[in-house]
Image (cartoon, rainbow, N blue to C red; front, side, top):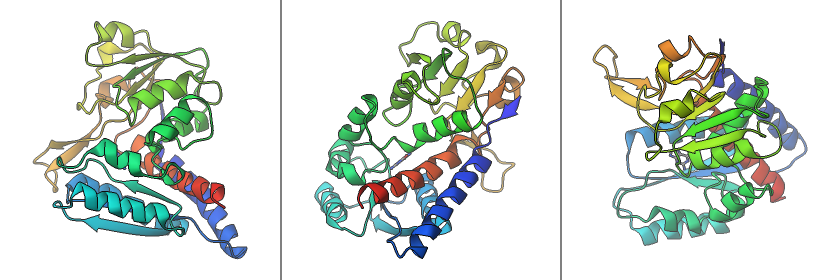
Length: 291
Ligand code: GUN
C-alpha cells in the first residue's frame, strides 16, 4: 500500500510556486494577490482561512483577509464582492463557505467575477471546465487530479466510483475523471443518497473518491483488493482523549480499508493540504491570465 501523501505533494507544489514568485519579483513584476472573505466566526472556516493566508505568505503572494460579522447583510456582502471585482490589485478571491443562513449563497457566488473566481465556483467556470475550455478548476478536485498524476496512478480505462454529488467535489470530480487528459479517461459512476446497492457498485471500483462527510462510512467489505482510495472527508468527532476535545476523521475506515488498498490518502494529510496548494496555483494562473 502506498500513501498518497498530500502534505508532501502540496509542499512540493508550494515550493514550485515560490520559485515562480521569486522570479516574478526579480523581474520587477507584480506578485499574485489573493483575497479571502470570511463572514461570521465558524470555527472550521476560521482555521481554513488562516491556513490559506499563511500559505500565501509562504509562497510570497500578497494576501488580504476581509472579515465581516455574522450580522452582515447580503447587500453588504455583494458590495464587498463588487469592490474586490473592481480592485485591479487583487488577482483572485474566494468567499469562504458556508455563509450565514440569511445570505443566498448562489447569488453571492454568481457575483464573483469569473476572471477572479479562483475557487472555480462560478457557473461560467464550471461550464468551461465541463467543456474542456480554459477555466479555474475547483481547488479540491484539482488537488485530487494532481495527487493521482504525481503518484502515477493509472486512471485510463479504470472504473472510478465517486460517492457524493456536491457542487464543490463530487459533481466536478465525476466530470474531470471522465475527460481526456492526465488523471482522466476513466469510466465514472457518480453515486449519491438515492443510489441502490452502493456496496455492489463500490466493490467493482478500481478507484473510489468519497466526499460525503460521514465519518468512516466506507468499510473494508465495500471495496475490492487493490483499490485506490481518495478520502475527501474531514469531520470533527468528539474525542475526550484529545486535548482539543475532538479527532479528525475521514469518510473511510482507514485502518481496515488501507489493508486492501493499493493507494490511499490519509486524513489528515491527504486531500486537505492539496486544496490549499491548488488555490495558490489558481491564483498564480489568475495573475498570469490577467497580465
Ligand atoms: N468551504 C469548504 N471548502 C471550501 C472551498 O474550497 N472554498 C470555499 N470558498 N469555501 C469552502
